[in-house]
Image 1 (cartoon, rainbow, N blue to C red):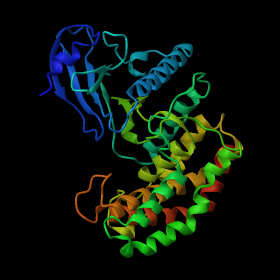
Image 2 (image 1 turned 60 degrees about the horizontal axis):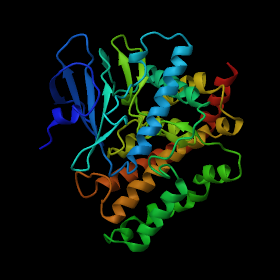
Image 3 (image 1 turned 30 degrees about the vertical axis):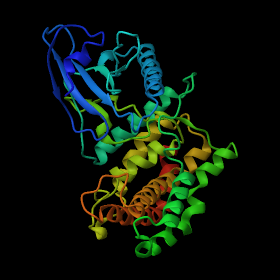
Length: 363
């Protein structure tokens, strides 16, 4: 059993540890709160890094250090106050790194706890605007980051790769499930060429990669008690990607009428008000650096991510549920159908979305 006090002692924290206890409900990393005795010293967050997913921990932490240092500098330039609550700060271990590897080859990091802050789970038109504004600003602050970042999960949002993985799964048919989903496979294949547009535009030099968060959910933002955004958190997936990653994936989860694993298929569909609010907020901060190609393909991004997630869920279902956690045998199949229905509904909104983007930019 891990002695958390021993782990914390490897970091250069201020004060004396009073207690270490679990906090939050993260699916990837084990997270604990470190309380200190002295009221004048901060509390801390201790996390075990899942190096099965993030295999290059040194690269992971280097990315995070570059990003947080850059954002902190930008906030100071703007004369922001309370910067300690508006930018994550990671504590050095005794060897000067921002992580510690224990004798069992487990990796740990410590950041300063942000007091009087909360996360949210609900997405409505009001919070959607705030999320769009915040994630757009996050990208905007990192546009001029000079040192390149590495990919913490290589090809994470590469549609061509995801389709290759589906085709390999179909060919192997390890769980004997292909026959039951042939109609879905055929439909996904009929859209495949169109959905790989981003990779083609990139190879042609028409679409840039930028520093993106790559996990844009409302609960990856910290709010103060008055509901104002403090900062973006959960920076493990911050890496080069198309801006479609941050824009499209937020709307995939935030603008669906139901959860991604709901089998209430009649209710699946795009929330137009959430789409509009998020887009308006996003363009208010990201609109000044986006290229015409990026802007004109925002509706494509909204369709891309339910399509991509459908491919990923169906691939896992065909492989016998080896990647995503499932609660029952058909869980991944339900997820796949849900996302395919969302994709179809998004495509019915193509013209509406394009018109709204144009109208918003003219305001």
